[in-house]
Image 1 (cartoon, rainbow over the protein chains, first blue to last red):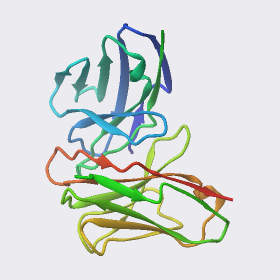
Image 2 (tube, each protein chain N blue to C red):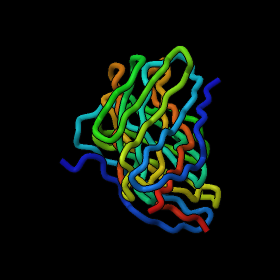
Image 3 (cartoon, rainbow over the protein chains, first blue to last red):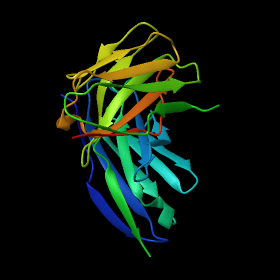
Length: 109
Length: 114
């Protein structure tokens, strides 16, 4: 079967660092996407990992371990505008995204 | 480029009424998708299309129909609306080829069925 597990909600402080974990089981695997979704808005693309290791893009980094079925999204220098839901989406054998329920990140001043 | 657009943005229906949601994309993408998103749940795939004239069922297709008569448009129909179909509906599109299959989303349609 297919399963994605990520925390429902996390809280962090402005300026700090937060790591959002995602574990997954899919029928086949062809990479993993992270999307950001602000309340009331559509999801937008953040990152894509297909090989093991860390991909860095400004304040955001994403890590993948294919053998462990594990990924994390690392957000540095948190800003109030980072308050959003973060969706983990591994791809299956047909390259289609399988969506997790998302992690709601709350940033406090 | 407008990307992915959806109409309408909001709609209120009475139980038993029908309606059609329109999705349009100007990126020449082959693949298009309809999702629903409910509080506390992830995006659930209703139907999708891998090209003009083709459609396929997703995870939660019951009560919905779709059509892809033109490559740029993907229509979602509710035959007889039920309160359980109250949700936010997102359309998305992607190239569909190869491993980098990023999906681009429309702004969503907020549907309430009374």
